[in-house]
Each structure stands twice: as structure tokens, then as C-alpha cells.
Length: 213
Image (cartoon, rainbow, N blue to C red):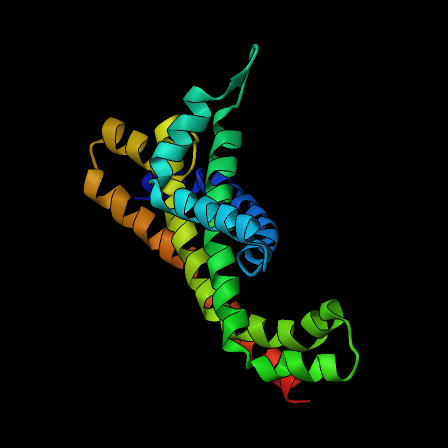
């Protein structure tokens, strides 16, 4: 039992690395994407909508294979970890853009109008008034996606990233205790997801207090 658990835990660092890096890419790139989705310029809005639909419409494992096996510049080729982070990061950007869009849309249009009436710039209105409210609305969806991404990181094992599922499969094949080691892997995934739920509640409580001021 302990040997199986140790084998599973060997993959935790890379699972967290792939998840954290991919989510960070998504959080950052989701901002220009959502701005494009809300743009008044039709070509920009259409291009961003097509990009989001494309990234979300193709299975993650296909993106990882395309980037890992199909993208090369001269002698350069992405290593497994980089391909996994870039692939999942781009997909995360598409999902985060939709989450942001939903959060912004949930804020009453009167908030924008009030800012304009007071002569406040669009950026200040967004960052000081609309943004915090939209973020509070988006937190549950962001947390749900982050939890989903932790589980989706297991796909990276298909291109050789030594994360939890990679070591779990190796131990199951070599040790013969397949069911036990996979149950342990499931328990480790649950243990990693619980803190995200707790953090979500804390952030939501904190933002409620700020918004209510």
C-alpha cells in the first residue's frame, strides 16, 4: 500500500506544475480574448469567437498531439511538459474568456452608464467598479474549471509527462495491484481539489465585503 502511494505521489509535482502553469496562461490570455468577444469591431469579434470555438471544440488530447508531434521549427520541437502546458493553457484561455464574459454580462449595464456619467474612463470603470463584481460572479465557474483542469492534466501522460497517471499506470503494470493504486490516485486527486473549493469560498466572502462597501 505504502509503495503504491509513494508511486502516485511521485507524479504530484508535475501535475501541479502543468495545472498551475496552464491555468495561469488561461487567466492571462482570457482577458484579451474576452475583450475581443465584446469588441464593437465585427472582424475582431468574429475572429475571437472563432478562436474560442476552435480551442474548445477540439479535444484536449488532440491539441496535445498536434503541438507535441506536429509543431516543429527546424530542429526545434516542444518537449512533453511544454507541449502539455501550452496545449492546456490555450484551451484554458478559451474557457476563461467565456467565464469572464459571463461574469461581465451579469453586472448590470447601469454600472457602466454610471461610470460614464461621472466622467470616469472605461478602464477605471472596469477595474474599480465592474471588474470586482464580475470577478465575484465568476469565482464559482473559475474554481470549477480549475478543478476540472487538475483532472484534465492526466491527459498529459499520453505524451510522456510523468504526472500522477503516468506513475500510477507504471506501478499498476509492474506491481500487479491495479485497482488499489488507481483508488489511491483518485484519493490524491480529491485531496488536491478540496483546497480549491475552500479558497473559492474565502475569495467570494472577501470580494462580497469589498463590493458591499
